[in-house]
Image (cartoon, rainbow, N blue to C red):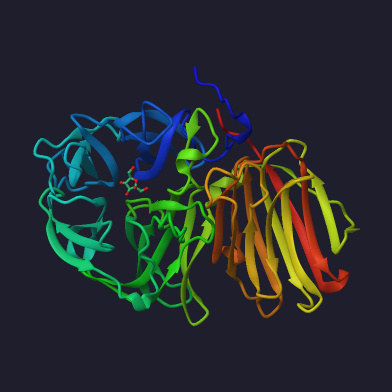
Length: 497
Ligand code: FRU
């Protein structure tokens, strides 16, 4: 039996494996009414190693059932990140048209010589068990750091497309295939430095997907996403960056600057669910809620690693360009329980006002903050303090002077696992014309996810409180009439088992 040594950190509605190490989501695919979630997994322990594909299934992306390990490290080859498709027309020949095979493309990491190559496996039993293709690898450049194949069907060219990174060359390679086995190099994408893209550390886990531009009739753009692992010495930024552009089946052309997908520290190696041309049309992304700066040191046991909540992506006009917005999947609303009601009247604090809510040991919450700033001059900042005690708090807020939205986890509990943990992350979020700013916040024991202004800005951050505090406080500093506000939310039903 598995038991939690740190039950006070166990997420109640985010996916976590029962035990052991987990990193990237892999092989995301929807078919037969089920969402598959594979993931980088160490079947033998709670540190990175023996990389294999763990597996969980769900009908709603909320209730997950862990399954046996799908692809095991074998013969000195680790199973690194990759993707999966439904081969509807049996182009690979691994099944038949009545029972189309699922086909996975993953990186084989050959431990003896550190070569990374691309390999194929297929499943004829709904993704439960996988058979490695006998002539693996299918793509071998005799190269190190060549990894993370994302494969999808491109209807206009009637072909399979693959993108993979040369991690240290900050290059994305595009391949095409008619059968998922024979791959032809189609192009290389190396963005110009004028896009502002970060090339600190490795580039990992690329993804490419189309979205309609909201408000523009039938305008489709392609989004190319790639993660940057950051530079440990300089502690540069880490996470997902994306380009918006055009894709014709072989070449991606970026327009404008690169943008960051999430403004927090812990949304990495994200990927979208495949089978996008047959499903309900939503483009859904999920990330590993961590990063490589401190993932080995987070104080949870016997599991180490959690996924973000799944999010629906959309593309909308923003400023003088376009921007991705993220929304929590609506399926999460099924977990809403008792409503949260803050104290009706604010109390006076040293430098402003505050209202509190006693969470009574419930640490899985969905919270809404809706604030209208009546006067920026009379306001210093407003925010929400979570798990607030004499010397502990996680603060999510907005500052008036530089119009920044921030998360401050410098005093959030256990913060000494790496220099990059006790930080304040912030990003500019100018007030709308009506002065309104709103945020939807998901708290789940050791994490917060914040969707600001409908998800045009998001923050994903882990935090590890070391004392059990039940006070949640909305505060503002400045004059009483600087803002008006509306607060609410729900306790979230625990589904961890
Ligand atoms: C990203 C990553 C991938 C690699 C995998 C190994 O987090 O480094 O590039 O395939 O993790 O576990």
